Amino acid sequence: MLNVPQHVAIIMDGNGRWAESRGLMRFEGHIAGIKTVKTVIKCCLNTKIPVLSLFAFSSENWLRPAEEVDFLMQLFLETLQKEVQELNKNQICLRFTGDRLGLSPAIREQMHLAEELTAQNQALILNLALNYGGRWEIVRAARRIAEDIKAGNLDVDSINEQAFGQYLATGGLPDPDLFIRTSGETRISNFFLWQLAYTELYFSSTLWPDFTKEAFEKALVSFQERERRYGKTSQQINELSDV
Image (cartoon, rainbow, N blue to C red; front, side, top):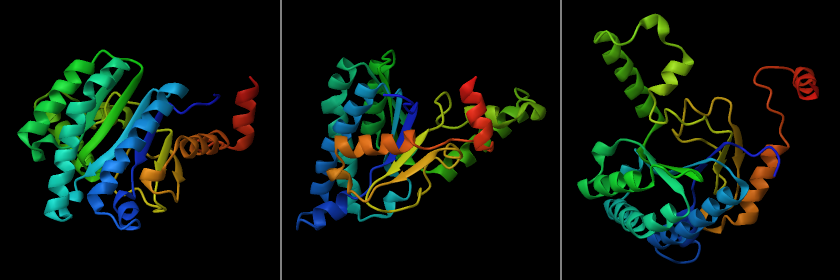
């Protein structure tokens, strides 16, 4: 496949609505959504997409009913424990982005073990955003920069966009080329506020549990049909492609 995005970021939206539309409990939608995660991971492996970021739990999701939050945390823990060996077998490197201090010790420990086990894998970086918020990430980066300046480890004049990016929780990863949100919602909901500056946005009306291999491929085709100009004109882009 030509023009494959180097990094795809997804807001997996619509689990609860999927369940409610079928007369099911909301938690059953979250369970169904795991199958879609596996489908998209397989698609990324097959198309040689190097990085996949999934927005698993936002810092605002703590405002949901306590029983749903507790279920989501337990589901994440159990799924990670169950799937980590298979992910490792498929040469997938696990990475986690977000505020770990707000998570339980059991989840933090399992995340650490998963990162250690898969650290050398190179087929795909699976970056899970858990207890993550874009504003939190930017504030955290600013504080870390201020601390380094105060300690004499960083000069103010050396701060530029590239340097700032290294202080983000996603430091070391390329910015997403393609952003996908399912369920028909058309907003980015505090996800990767810095990183999405030049990302191609794709919104699907499909609820996450129904998001199939074909739906993912449709998003990739949409990406390939777009002209990414980065402030330049179409003529300039065409001239560069002819060189």
